[in-house]
Length: 316
Image 1 (tube, rainbow, N blue to C red):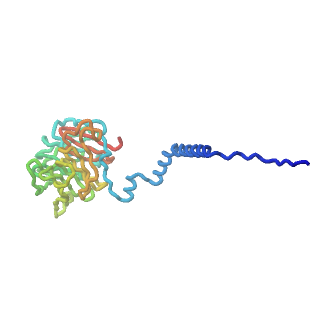
Image 2: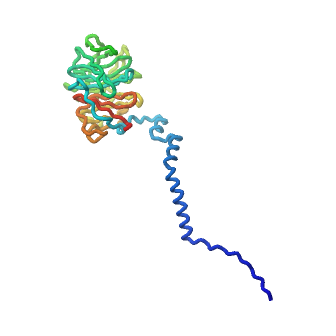
Image 3: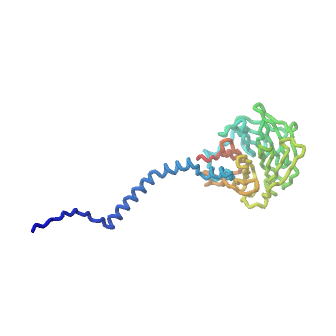
């Protein structure tokens, strides 16, 4: 009897668990490799599309972040001011000329500098005494403070000015008292309102606000908006001040503490920059920081006795 043979197709063996595990791991490694290769590109595109940077998000939410002073690093080396041997005091930036103006105390004078620290001219101050602070108000107008007399003087400096006589200037003495030689150290302005802010060095450490003087208002207002004497911020004294219009903050400079502190108008600390050796790219501590300002590009300048100018930037 003939038997029919059945043809049976060969059935491949089932993959073992070990083989499946190997294939799975290989596939996972492949996809991880692809992800790692393209991760920088993907994150860059995502950041550009969604604008995910912290600062951008905060600005879109209208949250004040301030200058974040810890980002600033020294640019180059300290610049020695030509023709100045001692008593460098206040500093301001003239946005109309793109230059810096520094005030010197004894002998009293103003020097104009470019942003690289090169002296462009010297302006003699005749009849002025103990000049400590300087602020550019706009429209060629500057405010000068005399420390011991606690006087604010408004002067006009044009491209042709070589000397200023105190007797012909508008001034006002403020009823603010403190210990001898611990008076007004710095002055700044809010350009939108014409408001002036002045810091008293110590005994007490004080912020003075003046409204109406620069705009010739009939009713002059002098007030103490913040109690800085009892606020724990690490400042033993105040030697300079700058108002940042973009963030509505004040930069308070301390010579004795070698510290720059940014506060909002309620006195809340936003950020700080230490001016000791080993911080902010400094090889040596700033000896006696007296003046502070920023230019249109956000570069930070600090003036120090006896005659040094420091430039700090966030761009490295």
